[in-house]
Image 1 (cartoon, rainbow, N blue to C red):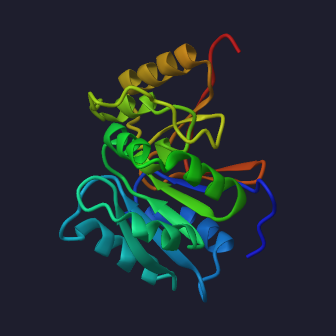
Image 2 (image 1 turned 135 degrees about the horizontal axis):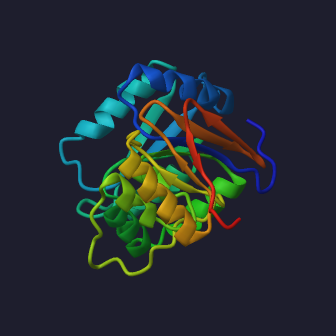
Amino acid sequence: MKRGSLMRQLVFYSDRAMAANQQVDRYLLQLLDATTARIGYISSSSDPKRQYFNAEQKYYQQYGFELAIYVELDVAYKPDLLDELFACDAIHLSGGNTYYFLYWLQQRGLMTRLREYALRQGVLIGISAGAIIMTQEVTSAELCGDTPYAPLTIYQGLGLVDFAFVPHVQDTPENYARMQAYTNHQQRVLYGCHDGDGIVVAGETVTLVGNVVSMTPKNL
């Protein structure tokens, strides 16, 4: 794959375990070469039985991708795996509690390295919490039910895009009102994805895939 300097290649998923995600997967296939692509996995929390990792391995295998390496941040952290992780063609940021995930990324000193990887080297794939972490700040996670993690005091994400992101959107007046209030407060465009929707960022091009909800601050 040819990747120019500062060439963002980001894929935002709301969910993975449903057929509708194939519409987002098609864009991922354009970014990765199925004959050679190796993907690294960062778990949002301990997964001792590799339940979620194994499921993602099978998911990627259907497209010929190799989910090659598992990195856990909190319990079974192995820093000697990091060089291999960042040598992968893509890195998968798993779902989970966004605040807990961000806390441990900060604790392990991986935020800057992940940002540089995404801007200059490989594809970053975010699922739910992992996708939120790619944005400027992560408090949009409360809109999909994430509970704040008390030790976390810095809510800044990787800052790879200008928009805010909310997964698992429910089409109710109450949910739309909460999203609009958040958008107005943050003064930032918000994209909300139903499960099966997604967003693909390639360089300066942002592609909304599926029935993505777009919210704009009222006074912009």
